[in-house]
Amino acid sequence: MTTLQHTASRRLAGLPRPRRSLAQLFDLYRQRRALAQLDDAALRDIGKTRAEARAEARRPVWDAPAHWR
Image 1 (spheres, rainbow, N blue to C red):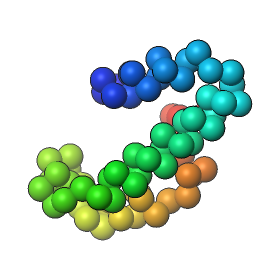
Image 2 (cartoon, helix red, strand yellow):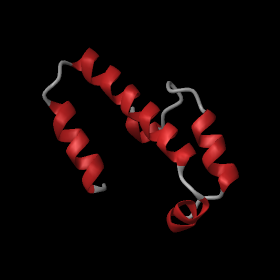
Image 3 (tube, rainbow, N blue to C red):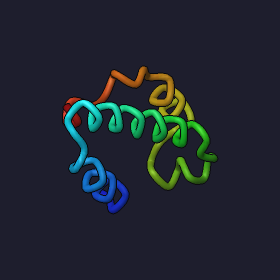
């Protein structure tokens, strides 16, 4: 878990469950939009191609990784 994820987890931990779920969906939305904005050098740094980043950014917000549920 990265420092950013850990901070987000602590921030969300105090919220009631429905609000936490909405906050997590919003965080996922923001992360995917940010991924779509990365330049090629940043994508190389994280081991992703432009096509992979584009495909991830296009996924609907409710299509979250299984380990998030």
